Image (cartoon, rainbow, N blue to C red; front, top):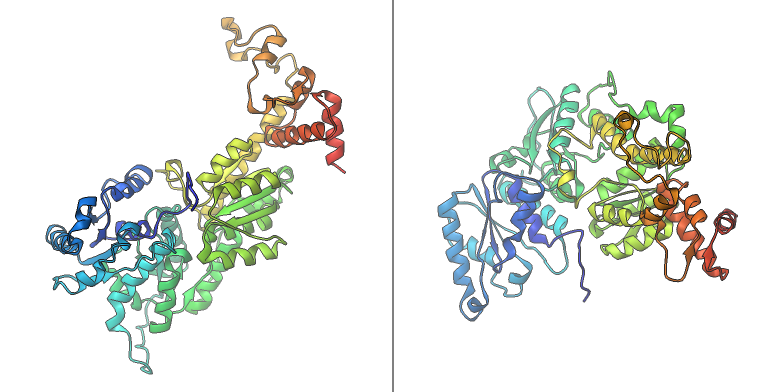
Length: 524
């Protein structure tokens, strides 16, 4: 057993809560100990929902374990139905309650409730959050549509000659930019003359799920959530699945082509409202060419990000991986195409070790990689859950479609361009107007002094992370000044290489010559 300070995914019952919170008319009865209601904060604090999730907890305590906890489950079930009057009741248990083996789903099914009951098996000790969300959504779809599956060998009911339609499946609460992705892809489909029949689970009701078979095809926007449900609908209702995830300009073009081919329509986009292709071909983008990038997150966004980085921005992807073991195959295949071996791990310390070894110039990852990159002094853009509140913006900020490509372009390129700006400022540090001792020009008339006139004082007070020294090695003052001329986004790498070179060669005081000798050594 390992003690971890941070995890990429919660237990499966958090995934079940995500599905219940995404939908209307669905309530979740969760057999769980007192304290498991912490999950409510994920939605009200991070996603900033104005309501708590539709969940009733049995909240058993230690003293309840000596009595009949099954009776507690039954009382909670009837109380939840009476109070909330849901259209469908989901029933499951948390990892702790699973050990008691009360089987709350079976108890609810046989308790004579007036509403449909969908039991969900969580497999808490072998699965995690995204799997729990996908299994819950699949159980809902199957539970509601099982009685409507056509008999084997029967002919499919011909659809009326009307506007073609699709279902958008997979967007959910606490997903990455799902709200805006749905809006962007709905608009893109409308421009193609395709109607969205149902979007689920986000903002869908059980009655909406009953209408899923009416569509001509299903769009699997987020395979982690919608993959099992799409497979079941394809097997039982003969609905084809559109599998291209439209993240990036190239993938969006392929998505449009797959939709047109699947639905048998002719469509050529009039415009592609994205600035990314133009900039990638411009002379200004040459600064970004070959930048070393490490990508990590859920499988869907990791594969998409690696493709965009490699094909559309001319970055060099030096490493990629995912914490989602259920979706690892797609990440391994994408990594193989780039000549890499994918990192499949949910241990953030292992991810940090790999990033430190690869020394990329940009990290594309989750909230955890943001922390890792900050410690290492490397720019980072968040591309995937788990994410923090700043990655659930109030403004319109999709990841999918052509507008999503614009958002991605801004999110990834700006950290690197700001690095270039920092580099230019460092180049002119000793200029009479731009040096560290110069006061801001807009304050000159007021006679305000912002830094000491003595350069030695300024240097002594410099306390950025790159200037810190270890106990064994000492940096000469001139060497520190030379080090600060290196752009901040590679300064950490240069510092580590120099200190390693000095230690290997028995140098205790790092001087300017040592810095350049180390550079020559590692450039061979």
